[in-house]
Length: 187
Ligand SMILES: [Zn+2]
Image 1 (tube, helix red, strand yellow):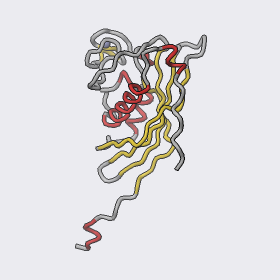
Image 2 (tube, rainbow, N blue to C red):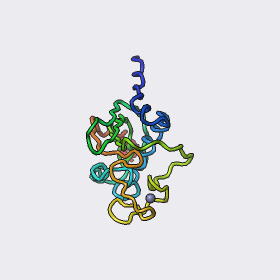
Image 3 (spheres, rainbow, N blue to C red):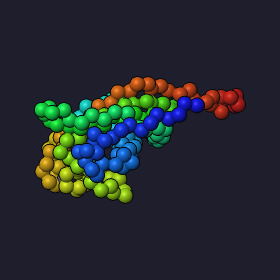
Image 4 (cartoon, rainbow, N blue to C red):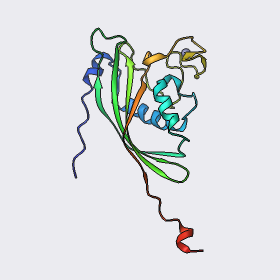
């Protein structure tokens, strides 16, 4: 058995944001992956998914009934390059999961990229994960497009918290269903 790959060095992010925690970020990505699939097509997660990411999810059809994440790991980090506007840091995460749909199970390997403003700082983690406005913390309610109805701030492109921008699926396929018991019994 091959040993698992060594965890990626996150010092570039830590130099900017002393409060950044790998465990907290991985938990955030884990929770967001499940929530984003469950909420395909609605706007619960608007502050956390770019329009591109949200539309990619919507195009995948009905939400799975259950999501089982096998592995999730950070496979790349990139801090903002000088003179590039907007200045964003990026974290790429590779996720292997099984999505259980009504009649089939889909095995997916997805690469999700998260961006956040290079000026943003991590906040203390909360024990129960909800998806509020990343600026004021109020339950997400949109005033217009991607503007919070409570604080009036536009939450565009990871200004306040990590936002997932794009996805690429490396591999995805249906797993063969077991033969149906009723057919096997010939009843
Ligand atoms: Zn707000």
